[in-house]
Image (tube, rainbow, N blue to C red):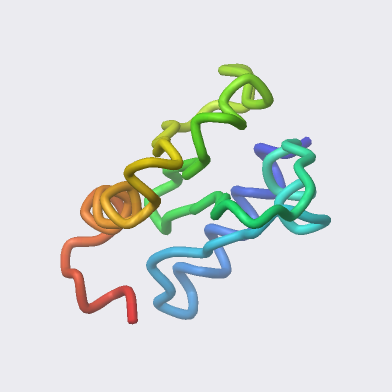
Length: 102
């Protein structure tokens, strides 16, 4: 069910030349990934690319909530290092150019 929804999203993204859709915890993240997380002060996102790739960027303290059955690649960060490096890694993996993310 979630895979089919992502495929429909990707199809629309391709039609409109959108490279990446970024989802925050809540109903949209659940609708497209099946992952049900609550908003917190720590950055957590799911990114779906126009090439059918799924990424999760999560703090290490949330890793136990993400099962490999969700698919995708998990990028994490510790509270000590913060999310900046993980965001850069996500940007690199999801785009051919850093200009895609503004």
